[in-house]
Length: 288
Ligand code: ARG
Image 1 (cartoon, protein in one colour):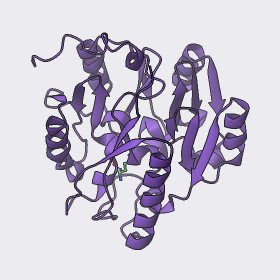
Image 2 (cartoon, helix red, strand yellow):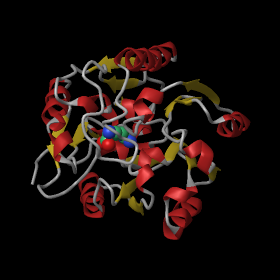
Image 3 (spheres, helix red, strand yellow):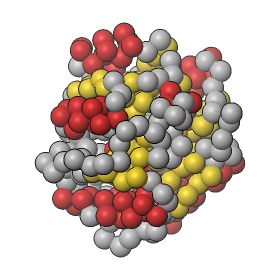
């Protein structure tokens, strides 16, 4: 059974570089609002063209990173585990994401206080397993909590390069058995976990990784990603995927690209739970 892919986006009305919380951001460089809107719209229209039902969140003044909906939380069936942002400047986003998720019928739950967790930016299913990046934004203990809560296996991966501060900047599952990754963002242990667990791993070079090519949106057999990664496009093609490169330079200025600007609501292509809905409705509900 195939269902319509659903993705949450937030228009860039108030997007800009108002603080610096990763090495890509410079308040001195700033962004071009017209070009940002144009690039965001091209991503939106590409997804619609691929058959995605794009849902839109209301943008909010004073929350310039609200466009990066991947960080809202982690979707699992009809549950939404809301993020707990590490940096104070992003913490105000959670109330908006939670209100949205509640209104859309998700069962919203938060991690206990003191846990840092940045949603689908750091937690990506590949098959039954949740691959979880920690150190710069999310904590390993948050991932442990999530694994217990959802009853899924979690493999925490330490991120070692501050430029690749979220897992989705250096790792992108394509299917239950295939993924893209940039080896330089992980330590030896992380690399061995990924190579040991995932049957087909496409390695992205350092030059292509800095153009955010791992930060891709997978819709069926199509991969929407930042342009500037011809080698990756060829490797994807050899695997039977079609790539749709887009220019998302205005968002790279904030440390994000295609994937960060989206939150898949019906389960990523690579998540095996989306194919077994009865398992996706676990014994959650009661908090505590
Ligand atoms: N400026 C944002 C931050 O540093 C960018 C977030 C990018 N999101 C992502 N999922 N990688 O938090």
